[in-house]
Image (cartoon, rainbow, N blue to C red; front, side, top):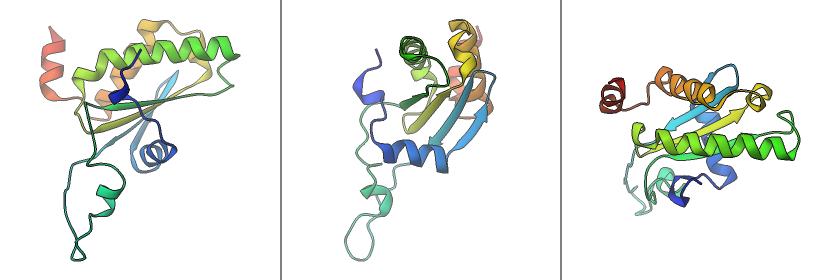
Length: 143
C-alpha cells in the first residue's frame, strides 16, 4: 500500500498534472508528470499567489502518485489487480523522484496481461525520458 502522503486524492490535482505536466506513452502505461516548486510569493494585496492557494505550499512527504485504471483494462478484479501492482511500483520509485513531483499513471488495456517487472521497466523508462529522475538516484541504481 502506498502511504497517504504519497497519494493524489483531489480531482484538481489529477487535472493539473494531466493538463499542465509532461506526458509520455509506453506500451502499457501513459505517465503524466508535473514538477512544481515551492514559491511562497505574496502579492501586493498580502494574499498568497495562486500556486499557494492551490495547495503547493502544503506538501508533506515526497512525490505524489495518482492512478487511472479504466474499464477498458478489464473487469473490477483485473482493474484492482493492476492498481495494486502500480501502487507497489510507485513505492519502489519514490526515492528516485523529487519531493515536489506529481505523477499520474494511466493504465492501458495491455497492463492487465503485462508482467509486473515489465510494467516497472516501462514506468522507470518513462520517468527517465521525462527527465524527472534525480541524478543521484540513477547513479545509485546503475550498480
